[in-house]
Image 1 (cartoon, rainbow, N blue to C red):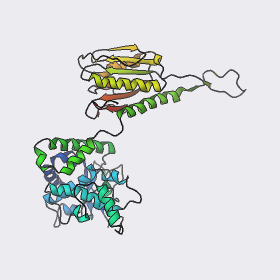
Image 2: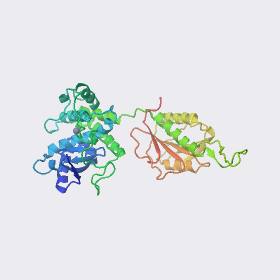
Image 3: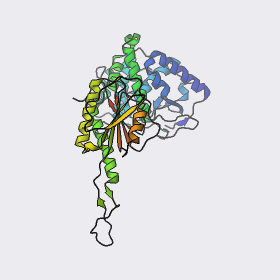
Image 4: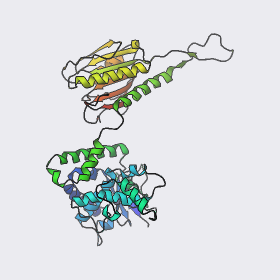
Length: 416
Ligand SMILES: [Zn+2]
C-alpha cells in the first residue's frame, strides 16, 4: 500500500469538521481530545488512523467523493480513533511482553473501544471488532483480550499490520510523519506527550462530571471506569516523591562543591595539585504558605515529612531556615526544626514574596522548598537556589514553573 500524506484541502477539512461536530455532540466529554488531534490527509489509506503524536490520518476518499462515509459514519470512526489515543494504547503496547503481536493488539484495543461505542449507540461501520467476536465478555481491558487471543489463537498470523496506526500501538502506517515535525504551516504538528497527558486528564474529568450529571444515562460504563483510572492518585506516595526531590536537590549541591582546589593540601606531592576536601553543607529554606486556605493537618504532615527527609539527608539544623509567607509579607527565621508552624489565616497568597525573602538571606540557600496550596503566582525565572514546589491540594497542580520540581500532596492523603 502506498499512502501520500499531505495537508487537507478545504472541502476535505470541511467534511472532517462536520464529522467532528457530530462526534462531539454524541460524546461531549471527548471534546478536548477531538479538538486536540492534528488531522492530515492520507491518500490511499482506505480508512482513518492515528499516530503516537496524535496526528489523525484521514483518507480523503472517505471524506469527499463517491466512496465517502456520511457524517455519522465518519464521526463514529473518528470516535474510535480518538479512543485509541485517550486510552493510551500506544503507551500500553510498550508494556506487553515481547515479541508483541501487532494484529492481536489491534483486535484487542478495537474491542476495548467498540463495546463502549456500541453501548452508546454510535453507528460503527459494518462488522466492527467486538469482545464477543473474540469470544470474550464486554467491559474488559485490551490486555485481557490480548492475553486471550494469544492463548486461544496462537496461530493468528501477524501481518505486522499497521491497523489503526502507531497511536494504537500497532505499526506505523505507510507515510507516517516523523515524530517531531509536521507538514508546515501548522498542519500535522504533533502533540507532545505532556500535552497529550493533560488532554487525557481533562477528558477524564469531563467524563466524571458527566457521570454525576445529566449525561449519566448515555455514558458507557467502560468510559467511567477508564476515567476513574486516569484520575486515581499515583501509586507512588507523595512522601517518596518529595524525599527523592529533596535528596536530588541536596546531592546536586554537594556534587558541585564537594571538592575544591581553593587551598591545596599542605604536604602535597610536588607537581600534583590535590584537591582539599571541604565539608559542604547544603543550606535549605522552607517557605510555608500561611495564608489560610490550607488545612493545618495536611500542613503538619507535610512539615513532619520535610523535617524527616532533611534530617536523614544530613542537613545540619543550623543551616535550616523557615520562612512564613502570605501575600503581604514574609518573615524569615533560623530554626532547629520545621515542625509547629501555626496557620494564621491571613489574606491572599503570593509565594513569590517568600521565595524572594528566602533567596535574599545570607548565606543564600541552595534549595528552597515551598509548601503551599498552589493558588499563588510563581516566579518567572529560576533564582540561585533549586526550587521544590510541594503543592497541597486536591486537583493536580499544573501551573508551577516548568524549571522547578513539583511534588503533589493530595489533601487528606498525608503520609501515614
Ligand atoms: Zn482501531
